[in-house]
Image: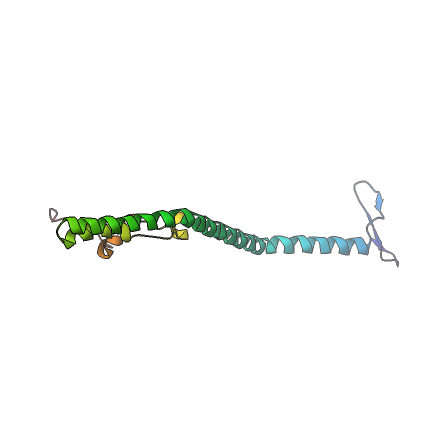
Amino acid sequence: MTVRGCGAFSLEFPETGIPNEGLDMNTFFKTRCAAILCVATIALAPGFAAAESQEEALTSEAGIGIAAALATLVYGPVKIAYATLGLVFGGAAYGLSGGDADVLHAVVTPAVRGDYVVKPANVTMNESLEFFGREPEYRYSQTAMLPAEPPEDPWTD
């Protein structure tokens, strides 16, 4: 290998005996910088992908929020009309039953209780949407946690 004063060096391939005059130091450094840039791009790619997934998650959450708001525009007035009619018919049932509060309670409770607004958790089906309301002590019974350990079987020793 011979080195010249202009920054180029020549190589001779032993198999062919053809000299290679085209590889100079400028091309060598450009190739090395390109290789470093490729390695850095590959190393930083997961960070950029995480940023894109955060943007996608934000866009998805915004879409779910808009869907919940639009659903509330339809669901809310229907629920309010149902609650109003429940109060009217509950009052009529109370009067026709001779002042029986249990009759009033049986008619008014499902009409007035329940959800009036569609939440994003309802759109994603993480929570149920209750049109017909329940008493507070029964409202979350379907989401109650099961015991950590199953009960003992009385038939085994």
